[in-house]
Amino acid sequence: MNRQLPGPGAQLALDTIGGQPTGGIATTGMNVMEHAHIERLAGAAPGDYAREPERVYLAAQRALGACLIDQWIPRNPLTMGDAGYEGKDKTATTGAETVVLDGVAIDSPEAVCAHLERVVWPGLRERIASFDADARVAEILAGERATQALFGPDLLKTGYGFVDFPKFRYGAYGYANYFMAYALYPEVIESDFALQARFALLRNRAAARACVEGGLPPLYRLDHDMADSRGTLVDIRSLDRIWFPPFAECIEPMLDAGVRLMWHCDGNLMAMVPRLIEAGVSGFQGFQYEDGMDYERICGLADREGRTLLVKAGVSVTTTLPHGRPADVRRQLDWLVEAGPRTGLFLGASSSIAPGVPWANIEALVDGLWHYRRRGRG
Figure 1 (cartoon, rainbow, N blue to C red):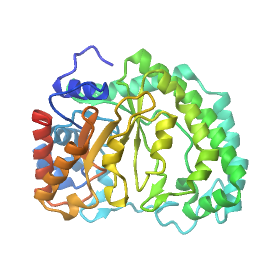
Figure 2 (figure 1 turned 30 degrees about the vertical axis):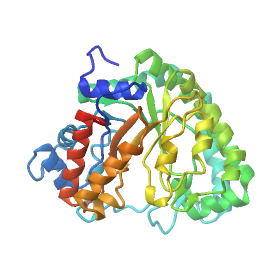
Figure 3 (figure 1 turned 90 degrees about the horizontal axis):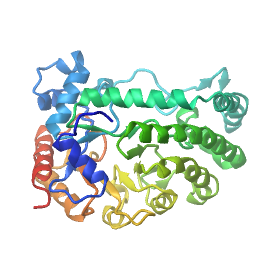
């Protein structure tokens, strides 16, 4: 990706991605949301994060012991105050009373279908017809190289945001009307997934080229919430029919390029785990253990090539960090290591660390991460 030799942290990350035995356990970047905690980690003064978010956020990542970061979102905590999310504009999934897209009021499942057919699909077909693979390759490489240059040689930037696949459209239409359309008009949703996959295939071929031609690290994280605490948001059998086939087809270019794909888990995704592996996913991140994600079982699985899964294991941001004590944080870290795979293991937090986590628990997390980075299982 650049001509500099990787530093020890980045090399530890690369060896972990490659499934090599390592002396230490690599640490992933973590999105700490409380400004005071970010500043304390970075050794910055109060108010410095709001004034210089990129510099202070990056310094905090280094203090956490991060070896790699995939999703670089240094300004994301600016949406948070001490009491949590402070976004003023409500969206389809955050309480908007009405949703209007392109002059169409999304007030029924039929309105969802009408908007897809009249607006979304024609636009998507036009993007497919005009897709410029060379421009897309250049765009990916420019973005990844710029971020890696910012990070320096000892913090590895891995892929996020430039590999596509079919997604639920609840973010645009809202949960109720979108999932009613899913249930009542499955042929429309199936057509939408298929068209999304056609465009994703073009983008993923370009992404695969970028990875090969630019020597990007061979790890990419896929991120789309498809479950809640009860299980998948729709019947898994419907996903077998209309989602998994186009998903598997459109990610093949990345697999052919030797890139390992890691899936971000939200909620109880256990029913999808074997299916994702069969499609080509070879790693998981973001476990909600309290919702039924069987960490120990997942860590014992292999990908479809027979390799040990890559696992980004994190201390729980919904139970242990906000509600536990430092001893609980240390105990969960120890369990993650003991039950985790012998190779391919990263440590961090299970998701973003919301405001309100006691500083003592952050300290315990950081101390534990550095312990395992330096000493490994020994």
